[in-house]
Length: 67
Image 1 (cartoon, helix red, strand yellow):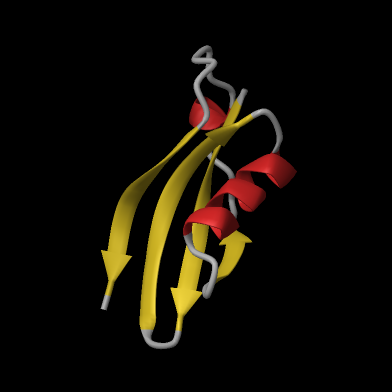
Image 2 (cartoon, rainbow, N blue to C red):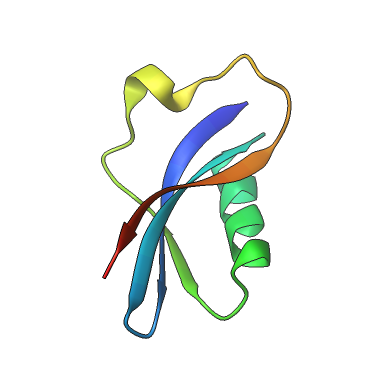
């Protein structure tokens, strides 16, 4: 499993979510499914210390909201 930060943008609303999935591509699919009207992009640089995770449960967690 990998864990990445995804930037979600919809109009003037922007926020970041931490997504855990089997691959980066799958993480983006999960973020898009949770935010169907928004643009979802991988936030770079990817943090090497949190990239690989031992947990086997995919999920999404909001980590930062921007005005």
